[in-house]
Length: 415
Picture 1 (cartoon, rainbow, N blue to C red):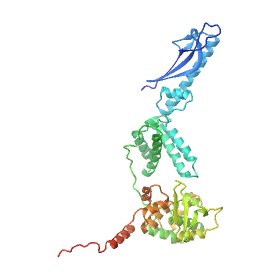
Picture 2: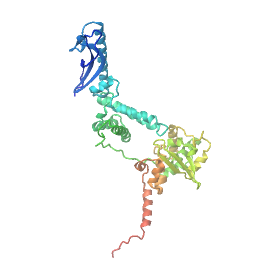
Picture 3: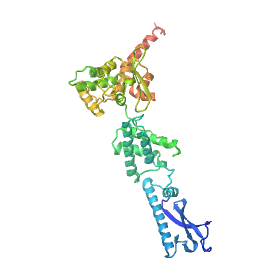
Picture 4: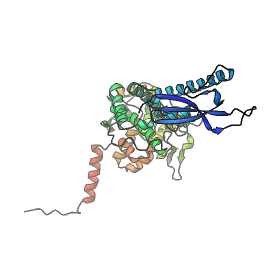
């Protein structure tokens, strides 16, 4: 369909107004018409003119009278505004209809949203919930994906934004290729960006902004999942190796605390004494909600976390349990600690959650459903990525199975 714009003006004779004071001449409303390809839209200009002053072919008033000059000036202003909105929409989305131009000219919000506009709305809604049930780090992820989409649309389609109706499988596959090849992202990072786009598509579908799910048939290249927890031996060395400074010891204690509770950096940073609950039997629990998702979680404190809490009691301000440094400070310290402990892998604070799931819980026979609740996961499939089954766990499970099956089956020995 052609995107060529045609704007014309004509008299709406069927809408007669009151006659002027002479009682001889009749003034009619001037109506504008926008034609773009096969789409047509009409709009009222709120201007009127006597029929004797109107030139049908040019769509303007005739003569050089003050009335004709001023009328033509207003019509030309309208014409320029229509062309301006037409150009703006075409540059942003690559396609434009007469209704969209009319709505833009009249200040009416278009029902046809664009991808980046929808993404901005998602970001604004998310930003308003930071510190309540959303995290700043996730918001920065939104910002990163928005920039990738903005650059991709500009480079691929030569426009500033794209209509949601053009969010289809070829667009998604091209964006996937752009992330991996042009941006050089690792498969895991590329999939993370695609997940944000998938969320935008789901919102658009729920709001009836698109009529079909665009991700049907999309099969991303999934990265190989690498073990992100410390092994049993590495965790033991991490806990017991002497360190040269109290600062490194404190960072190590924070990591160990999270390794025995599964609490994340964002949640330990906001942990208060009110969230340390003592039950009737004397056991102590962390009872809180994940900052990232708002999902509640409850973890019983084992001996080591209790010792760490008591060790630093009174060191934090206000009602906080710990005085937590920045994540950058912790990350730098963990690299130094790993070197002292002769651990070759890059140790991050998030590894403590993985270590809790795999080494502290799953390897010791804690059901994965319980681990999922303690980690505050909505979906147990997320927990499965944390809790990697190791040979020790398999060996223990088979040993218990052997005991349970003992003397339950008889196998006839052939002679």
